[in-house]
Length: 226
Length: 226
Image 1 (spheres, each protein chain N blue to C red):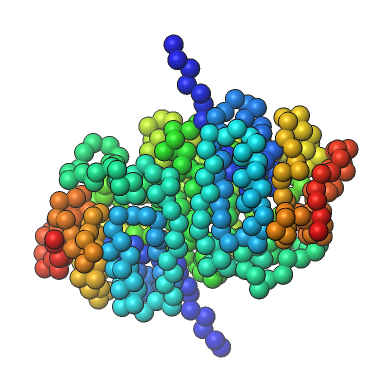
Image 2 (tube, each protein chain N blue to C red; image 1 turned 45 degrees about the horizontal axis):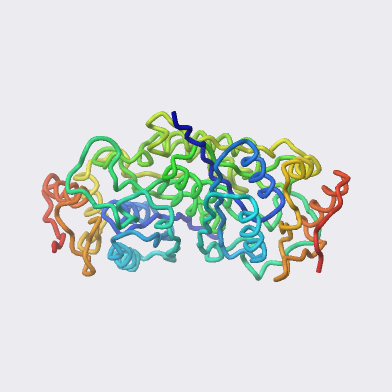
């Protein structure tokens, strides 16, 4: 009798949340296929962090798909004429990238179908987050419903599950779970405008949420700043 | 009083269906923004056809986004180790590209949001089609429901409508509507394995459905064959 390992595609940005998600998927017994995107984001250091995290996490494969969202514009993360703000404002911030998680999950869905993977893991979080519409539970539920009719495997009775292990956790809880799963957070980069060495700016939304998370978790913060 | 023209993003492959969809969107009074993809498909002639069609259709802008679905594999249209079949079989054919329309609509959704467009037009068709899961009305409805919670504009009360003017038409009816809208079908390429001059193979699913459509519509077929 052979045992077929269950497979999962894990979206991996190189940031704290996605690295934790990968660690949790691995801990749950999945053979992990990490998927990253080079979409013209400011923080190319994030992509190098993704490579480091994937290499340390014993993934079966790590794929980085290149496409140019900068063509479409509309976000401070891909359009270099828009400044990254140094504090959280009201509503959806300018760092919102239109339809980003929709796109990332769509790419993951295609790969999961080819791999015959059971699940896609994405590190969205509805607690300590930046107000992006595509990080909310109702978005994930709607994407799942769409995926259930979009693919050949789903029609054949094997829908691909979208797994969001971080969705209800605080940043502090995320960090505690990652530490428990053996993750080395010094490999991860969260800053929207990290320098070439992967050091954070300490002032953007993402740096602030990360630093607060380590403080709240009572865990020593390994983040390097510029 | 100024009149603000309504805008639409139109997915344009360069094939018969998408070119007709663009003609119908234009006829309906939309300022059209055509969106094509270079995703490692076999028929690069299709992309040149998309440029020709867009140039003749008076679009405001035509954008081609490059990304490499060949990395993911799993389809005869992107994986050159899989042969394109010369007849329709049972079930979903090998020319199915995993999650293709999900991806294309996601890209269109991002651009539509940046443009503040009202609609996205896609030339899916549930009558004379090849059995792809992501061409069915239930897929479009599920994508619309997902889009309604995925974007900032939708949260602000302006959801982007997914328009499928061809969904209930036969291939013959599509051709008749395109002719009525002034479309020159000699610009379009449908073949899965067209040559560099855009000439069809005459034997793949797509060539067969197209030829039958012209015959059924009693319209002279301008398709060029190898």
